Amino acid sequence: MKFVIVPEQRNALMGHLGPHLRADANADETANYPIVSLYYDNDDRDCYWEKIRGSQNRRKLRVRVYGSLDGKVPPTCFIEVKHKQDGRGVKRRIQMPLEDALLVGEGKEPTDNVKERLSPTSLQTIREVHDLVKKRGFKPVMVMRYDRQAFAAADPTSDLRITYDTGIFYRTDNLDPIPDDRRFSPSSMMLKPGTSVLEVKINGTIPYWLSRVIAQTGCRLQSHSKYCNALEHGDPVLQSMLAPSWRKAHPPCRHNEIDTAAASCASVTQSNLSPIAV
Image 1 (cartoon, rainbow, N blue to C red):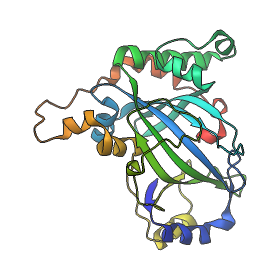
Image 2: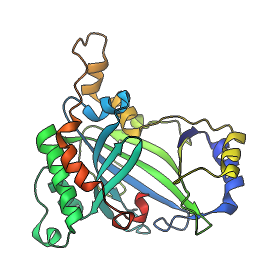
Image 3: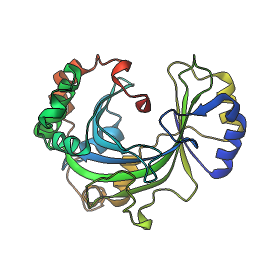
């Protein structure tokens, strides 16, 4: 569940939620870490249109880089397929050096010393990535960066996770991500300073006490795709499609082309995912 909130709402929320939360194990002592993501799409911007249309079977490909300049959060990189099918989201991802992740994103194999350590599930995910690249024309289109403050439930029996994302920036040039990337124009900030995207993540029903706190602080549930919003703000390709003079029909969804590859990956278990991916 996503909410766009102002600083006053965030402060009020944390006043209530603080006793129920602990800092995420992958963050520093303040629960903070930067996230840099390289997003892939094709010339028809299928990922955007499938999200806008509410396609029940859609995928998003990205390379995600963690790590802070001060070294408190060690650099880590994953290549990820984010797959939503019939309302259920699954994230298939492989940890590897950034150079190898970019190779896979080009439709190539990772270096031998990386490939030989990968599990059969990870190798299948690489084949899925290659299908997205070769059959659907996925290529790098945007780099995004934001700072995340992440919390988990203090109760070890709960899988509740709460994150706040602030300082969301994007660029459509220089598609070469680095850890803690700060090479963004001030004009590319997505939201007003201090505004956060709050995400509440839990399997099953949200606890009553939490839903009550969210309601009391005036948070309103809303759909918010950082990638789609960034495309609308600064992607020349999409902007030409959205212009009044554009008469071309919306690009067709072609997600069925790789259903077979995706289905064979869908059995991935939570043990295959890093805790930061939840």
